Length: 340
Image (cartoon, rainbow, N blue to C red; front, top):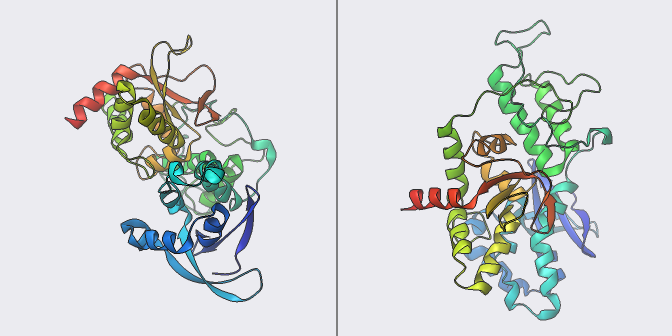
């Protein structure tokens, strides 16, 4: 790996770099910033089955221009380590800082390594959300290469949307250009917004089957992301029962950091609902390995009974976001069925 890059966060200097296309984050500076015992945290990482298998010692050029051995974690596993720090057991003077790192550190590092594209492409991602493909033939075209097939277009657009959700339209357009160079997407005409955004291609999406909608919801409910002690469906059920208010509040905060919230009754939502944020990294990671990656999951979840778009932004994990809401009884009934 080449020179480590300094990223300023919460008044601290973090260090990260890229190796074989993956962002690697130095762990010791974070421990120092949070006042954590380095030896203890290093041992905890080594003991963990996932973190221990992915942590690596990397020779990197440090700020003093000398080569040093640095213990690094892949960025995608950083939250797995951070959420293992119990904010309730650290010194009171650093508790808020630990929580801030758990909420925001991943986002700050991820955004740092994204490419830049024109600012005018920042538009409302909720407009034209039903677009999934454009009318391109399966046959090779006259541009000297294979045209983007419908399936390539669908998968390509999902990848573009994934990049846009995680890091904004700048990364979305950069990903589009990369896929177009490989022949997986058509070239983006000058001045044309990215499909799925306002003013996109406007091609109607194919209907979502009830089976696919239920399968998409099942995948979300069965997921157990880092930082959540149980599957999402079990967490939602526990929050609905509210037996232990202190424990439930902690669980709900952890759920919201992923991008899911049990919403109280509001006039514009009706009764209790489950909201899923379309700009949450945790939600994007849950659907990334599936056929619903990108923002396709949102269109599919809307086909679940009572699934719908809210008429305005929702507050999830302290951030304003749009997404999908589903009535809580529908979600609880589905979780009871798949968990029994």
